[in-house]
Image 1 (cartoon, rainbow, N blue to C red):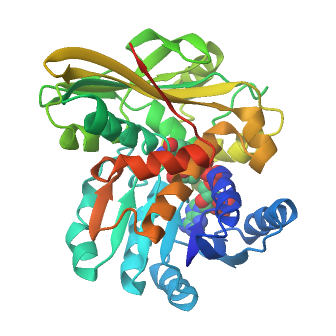
Image 2 (cartoon, rainbow, N blue to C red; image 1 turned 45 degrees about the vertical axis):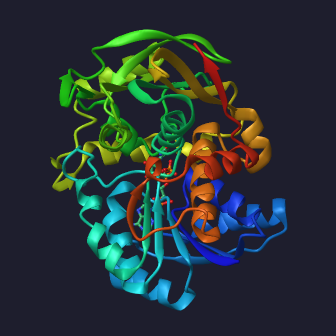
Length: 395
Ligand SMILES: NC(=O)c1ccc[n+]([C@@H]2O[C@H](COP(=O)([O-])OP(=O)(O)OC[C@H]3O[C@@H](n4cnc5c(N)ncnc54)[C@H](OP(=O)(O)O)[C@@H]3O)[C@@H](O)[C@H]2O)c1
């Protein structure tokens, strides 16, 4: 029985709070902390009303390391679940080291002024976490997260060598808004407008943003046009999957979404540098974020499904084999259960599952870990029970 501190009260933070509250056998006490106390209190009230469990609440600026370290030393959780923004990752890792607490997140660090996400900044904490005897689990969402564990499962049980991986991510849901993003708009738009990148035979290959597409047949959804993107799990999987020859990531976008994005880009609204406006400096993408719907607010009335999985090809007993391992999640079902849409849900459930792996000792170690470096079996058993069942098909 352990205490857990959740940082971030957005769409994903709401799911983590609900699901952690439902885990009485693993978490003796749950605290939700974020920058804006009113959002924390709204989630805590909903959790109490739906699950009859009272959460502790706190206001914290996670970029203020001494303030966060004090909260950790006072509350003494066993693990922090960081579902604030990627900009906070290093500060929260610093505070965890200072207070002697394990760390988990769902997205890798990005410097605010460059749209570039790489593991190098967090991998550089390896020695510090090791010598402090603490564990940091990186990318415990769906993608990264469950997709990394799917690959580890295929490597452990289905193929002797995994040669080709295509991670395919489809949201075929409809929220009824002209334009909205399913998770933090700033992080989402930075990811999608970046140059595409994939790994082949030891090298990274670049493509223009959204310039390469193909049709995938997604279980539960059907055929959808999918675009090649760079996604952070490619970096760790290219390092950790043995015998790999190529790994790529694909995501679906509707025509209306792409048209809005193109226009916003053309007029400069997706810029991440400061511009002068009426005597003030503003960052256009941050201003855009303030105008767009909050991801959590999309949940009510969202219909349709997400379908996300890994298509893995390789060799088993000298024979070529191909497997598709995936999950389908329904927006309306997740709303019924925890008042969230499926993108927040498919991120929050693996975050709680990763934390359960850590507090139960099913996953243990000292240092910094990516998900595929740990045993896939207990995680996949648990994540299915917690709301994300998965399936394997030979193709
Ligand atoms: N791996 C995956 O599959 C996956 C998928 C989707 C999302 N994600 C990640 O999940 C995270 C959360 O996404 P989301 O959609 O929930 O975002 P969101 O709705 O924008 O919520 C972010 C929350 O973090 C809080 N926050 C920001 N800066 C903070 C600071 N300095 N100190 C304390 N709290 C701070 C925000 O507070 P305010 O309310 O004050 O702004 C907000 O409550 C992001 O890192 C995203 O990249 C991962």
